[in-house]
Image (cartoon, rainbow, N blue to C red):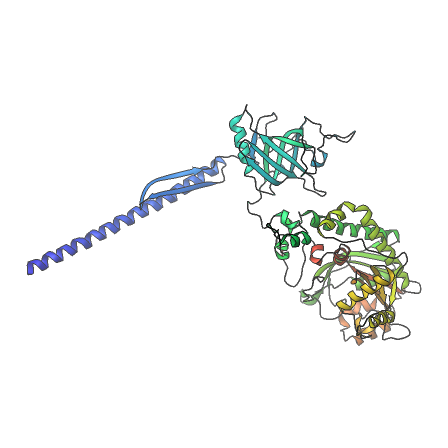
Length: 583
């Protein structure tokens, strides 16, 4: 019995010892593998760095828990130097440029895609059929199959032009030709490329340059886009009407949400209509300046960090200014008026405006661009309203005449009609507006501000009665206007103020200002405001100030409403609202 026990004990001891040895050996193998892997990776990185390569892969191939081999794969595609690495003959060439960093100059001459045509303009340097051309643009679409590839290249500026480029397998350079076809087929959409090739006759109805194409000899990548984009520009460029109509079809179109667009705004602005909206916005600024320069105005630039509230209320962004309380300007109002005190008879400004309003509507922003002006008047604020009307006539007419291409592209995706306006200022007085709304069946408070819905209704009533989408409403209740607004001389419950509307929504607020210092102080006190931060502003009225009036116009709203957009964020390059401070 003892012999049996001893044999059993020795048997288990040998098994335990064997397991320990096996585990020890396995640990040694794993350690050796890790050390080799680390050594190979480090060595390979150094080798890649020396040789100018920027990518490598390291792959361990295991077979049934046993390491059979280690294979190292290195991407041997060297970058092509833009300045010296591109051949000047007709040989096939493709690849990625190394970084273009203003190292020197090349003798390369690029043609705009818009120049490419079978019938170039007389006297121009546009290429002719059979000429070799260099073009640069974005990859808009790609097709590659077998021995042929096609791509559509888009110009990088509005109005966007497109041209087809293609390559057929070259029998004289079959291997390189085949590789080029594969290279083009793998190009990611929105990548920026240089194309060198021969301008040839073609019939390509899907491109703006419909009677030509470029037969590729060289394709070189300037900047690569990722293969997976946040959204396709094709989807983002569809009208809501087209999307809605497709929902009952076999292939419903996809839409792109507003948040996805705004999170990738730089990509969204490549959509032709959205790009054109920002160009129209720029046009409004140009026309605003032109109209006021022609009226004898001077452009000024006022501080945006101020010690007190420029509009009153609590809707300000507050900050610390080296130990002193400060806020971001709600408008340039105080400084426009001080400019009048300084004998700058007529002034205007284009600049940022900040409002700390937790408004989540389609027409409110926390930062927008203000188009402001102020002017001395002789006897009545109607003098300012006359200037405003002429200003907007210049803007409306100018947009339709100078920006017809942009408007056509915008209206294809976002349908709208030009704003209708009268030859002379259309001014609706507050009591008349109250009567119009009451007669239409609405309950109104004559001493309260109009709600958004009542403004829209009034816009409809004015449009029906006067055939106009643009009008002024004056004589607002004093209680709903800022402290610097001049009270009405007959009934101080009302004021010498006015708002302007497009399509039933407010785009401009203005008034005659208080130029009498005692009245101004009284108004500040009536509003319950602290006079301290306004001391220098009030002091400027103690030295004589002429009667004056002005207005503050919201650029974003003008663009938004003129174009009939569904959201003011579409009219802002990088909008700021309570939920968005990036990008």
